[in-house]
Amino acid sequence: RMRYLFLILFTVSLNAQILPSQQATHYKKNSVSSDTWDSSIKPDCATFSNSDRTSLENNCSNNWGTVYGEIAVSSGIQEWEVTINSITDARIGFDMTLGIVNLRNNKDTWSTNSAASGTLGYVYLQDGKKETNTTGSNVLSSYGASYAAGDVIKISLNMNNRELTFYKNGTSQGVAYTVATGTYYLSATFYKGSSASLTIN
Image (tube, rainbow, N blue to C red; front, side, top):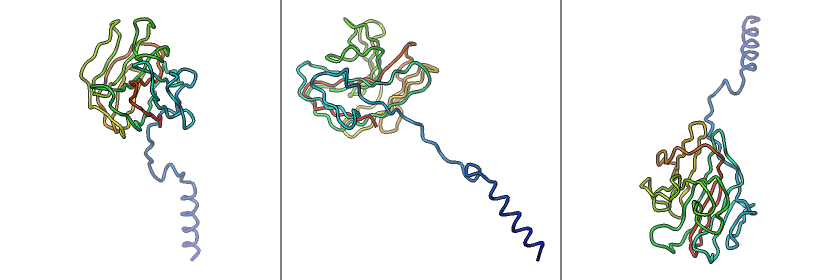
């Protein structure tokens, strides 16, 4: 009887020393940005809500307007998830782009308009194309699936190998670009009258 009691006490003591992390392997989801839209750099026609996580286009007078994230990324891996709450087709082809830029000085125009601003950027257009202005002029090319209201777009920037990848509803669209070294910000461009609403998750 004493032998059984000793065995029970030994088993209890052994189990008490097993840490929760040793009992099971838990999947850890990749963290995404807690970024917000920068309210100090935005078109007058854009309104922010939801603690500056949601942006809404509201009858812009300029053809294009751009909003920017606040987080500056120059190293490591940064990911943003943006939900497209609504968008009304106001232009043939596309009314929105999502991506990254190194300067936040095109709030009243196209995010990668480098003619006067010197901005360098890489974006994923609503119609599925991609665009960069690394050559000094904007270059469009085929890339992935188109997106619309209800879709979630993830922008994954890996500055360890400088690869930029976009995801639509969790599905990778492939590596879009190998970006130049530098510092980048989240950017979203929308066409006037599109009522584009975007939320950083």
